[in-house]
Length: 191
Image (cartoon, rainbow, N blue to C red; front, top):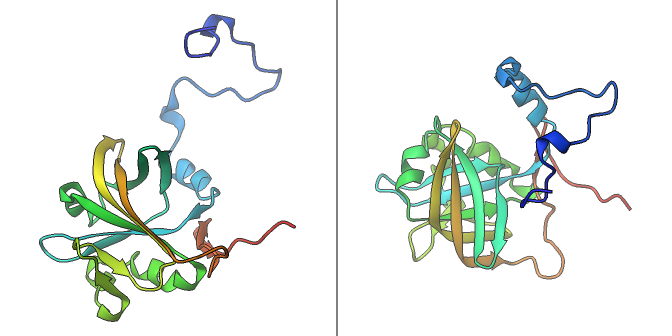
């Protein structure tokens, strides 16, 4: 075994007869094939908001993940083609809102053009630190930007959580909003 717990390549077991092998040359994988496969992975829907010189900025992110409990770190990706990329790269802090099923309208709003996202002032307010907060969001976290890592056609944003808002108590007030195969869903228990 190597120091990382994997067998050196010369000692790896051969795949069973008939198993598909991954080609060493990935040039045959098209972006259409890749996107079609990724549509079959369900994801929670979040909205990231931040303050910017030109006003509030926000976008949906289904790539959210918890990275570490100590220190409390989160992550998400933003496309280099996003209308929010410049503001994100310049931001010092942000808020990630975990959407409930009752907030599908917000997910749809923040998937539209940037001008429409904050047009309805009744949907949001600001924290004392300047970031926009969306009303009715059961859980949100505020984070400072810890790292920005350009990778492929996206930037991986790592945030250090400085505040947690959770008004769900022992029982969630709403089911989380999920995105799967291009459609919004609500989870159902398997009991």
